[in-house]
Image (cartoon, rainbow, N blue to C red; front, side, top):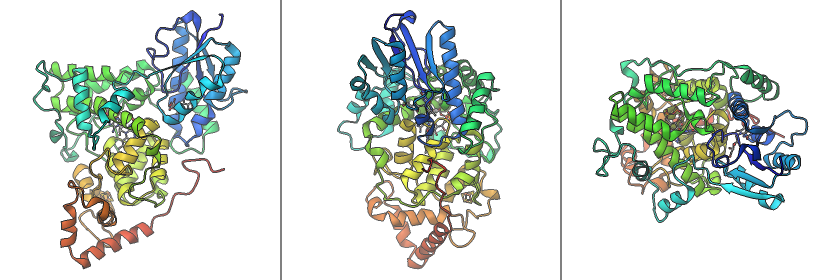
Length: 521
Ligand code: FAD
Ligand code: DLZ
Ligand code: SF4
C-alpha cells in the first residue's frame, strides 16, 4: 500500500458510518485504534466502564477486519505504547507514512484540543470532519442559542421535532396536539411494579481478556468488576433495544421518575452506553419508538417522553457543552465548596435513598436519571458540594459518562453552577419529593415526615439551609422566589431549628479521602 489515509477512530466512535470512514477505500486506508493510559486514567473510571470501552473497541476492530478493513490496533500493554492519542498517532505516522490523516472531531473538549494541534505537529495533511451522528451541529446550536437569555430545552426540542418530523403531523402540529406529555409521566411506584430487567450479555473471550487486564491494572478503581453484562457490539445493542421496545417502552413514560429500592432498570432503556459509544443509532431508536406508537404498541406519553430524552435532552446538552466550554468546567455560581462525603464512594450512610443509589452505581456503573438528579444530585446541590468534586465523581462512576454529556447535566442541571443558563431554577427538593416518587423512605432510619432534630430526614433541613444560604441569588427568580415568603412566615425560632439541624448534619459528614476519583501523585 503506498501512502495510505490514516483514520484514527476513538473509543466512542464505534460506528461503521462514522464521517471519517465514509468515502474511504478499504485498500487505501489504515484505521488506527488506540488504548491509551491518558484516557484510561484522566479520572479513575469505574472498572466496568473501562471493560466496556476496551471490549467494545476490540470487538469493533475485529468486525472491521472481518469486513476487509486494515486495522492497526494498539493495546494498552503494548510495549512501546506512548500513553496518549497524539503519541500514538505520531508512532502510527512513522509506521504507515500516510499521505493524510482523516479524523472525526472528538466528543470531548479535552481530546479535541489535542486533535487541533495535529496539523502543526504532523507533516501530512489533516482532515477534520464533524461528528454527524448528532442531529444538531455546533453551528446550528450556536445560531439557535444566539440572543436567547434562557436556553430553554423545550424550545430547542421543538426545533428538533420539526427537523426530524418525529411525531409531527402534516400541518406542522405535534401528534396528539401537545409537544410534551410529562404531566402523565409522574407515577409513583406505590402501585407495585415489576418490569423485566434489561438483558445482560455473557462476557466472551475478548471481554474476558479485558476483564483480566482491568483486574491487573485498575484494581484500585471504584466499582464491582463482575458480573459484567453491558452490550459490547452493535448486535448486542440491537438485542438490548429489541428487549426495550418489546417489554418496557410501554411504561417508560409513567414510571420514568419512579425509584424502587434494589432496582435500577425499571422501564428505562439502559441504552445510553450503546448510544454514546456509537453502537446504535439514536435517531433509528426514535423512529422505532414512533413506529411502536403508530402500530398501537406503546402510548404517546411513553413514546414522546423517550424521543424527547434523545432528540431533546441528549442533543441539547451536547450543544450546550460546546457552547459553554471551557468555562463550564470551572463555573461555581453558588460558591459551593464543601468536600464530597466519603459515602459517595463507600455507600455507607443511613440515608437509605443515597445508600441504594451508590449501591447500584457500584454494582452496575449505572443509576437511572431520577436517582442521578433528585437523590445524588439534589443532595450535592443542597449540601453545597464543590462542583469539581461532583463532576469528577459522575465522570468516574458511570459507564455512559463522557464529559460532553456528564458536565452539562452535573454542573448546569444539577448544581446550577452556570447560574441558570440551562435550568431556570435549581432542582432543590426536600425528602417529600423522594418519598413521593420512591419506596425508599418507608424503611429508612430517618423519618421523612420529621422536619428538624435528631432522626429527621436530612434532606428537610438541608433544603431550607440551601434556600437561606442562596437567598440573595435566588429570591429574584420568579420560579422559586415565592418560597421565601414561606420561609419568612416560619419565624426566627423555627428557622433556627432548620439551620441548626442542617449544620449539625453537615458537620457530621466525613469528607472523601483523596485518591478515589483521581490518582494522587
Ligand atoms: P433512558 O431513561 O432510557 O433514556 C433514553 C436515552 O435518553 C438515554 O439512553 C440517553 O441517551 C438519553 N438521555 C436521557 N436523559 C438525558 C440527559 N439528561 N442528558 C443526555 N441524554 C439523556 N447520560 C449519559 O449518557 N452520560 C452521562 O454521563 C450522564 N450523566 C448524567 C449526570 C446527571 C447528574 C444526570 C441528572 C443525568 C445524566 N445523564 C447522563 C442522563 C441520564 O441520566 C442517562 O442518560 C440515563 O440515566 C441513561 O440510562 P438509560 O439509557 O436507561 O436512559
Ligand atoms: C473513556 C475512554 C477510555 C477509558 N479509554 C480510551 C482509550 O484507551 N482509547 C480511546 O480511544 N478512547 C478511550 N476512552 C474514550 C475516550 O475518552 C473518548 O474517545 C473521548 O471521550 C473522545 O472525546
Ligand atoms: Fe432518603 Fe430522607 Fe427518605 Fe431516608 S427519609 S430515604 S434520607 S429521603
